[in-house]
Image (cartoon, rainbow, N blue to C red; front, side):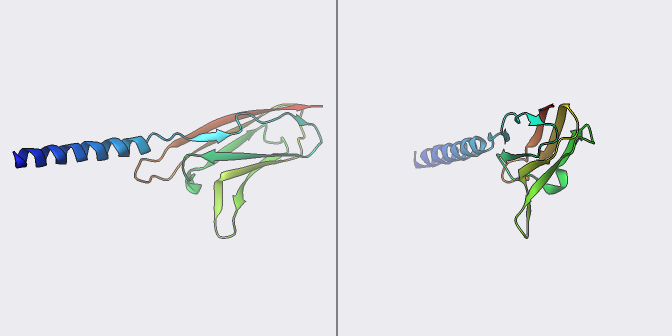
Length: 128
């Protein structure tokens, strides 16, 4: 009886550990804000983008701004010894009217859970 009780407790503990571990691994990547505000042609533009749900790997982070001559750029936050791709700045002076598309992609560092993929597209409307 004591042996079966011990085995039951062991199995219950193992099940609980697996269940709790899987709960921690359900965290999703969240990129805020959901959309970026409208810009005005020739007027300096500045907005911040924050990535939650893991530390973005520097070597996996990619971005593309279309059109390339839009006048906007993306830069990570520089904390001196370390650059953070979780805190991005969109800045510059728009040089083209119409939509500017910003595509972000990358992944987070794996911890006890696998790394997560980051994919986000923003469209900034530039008015004259």
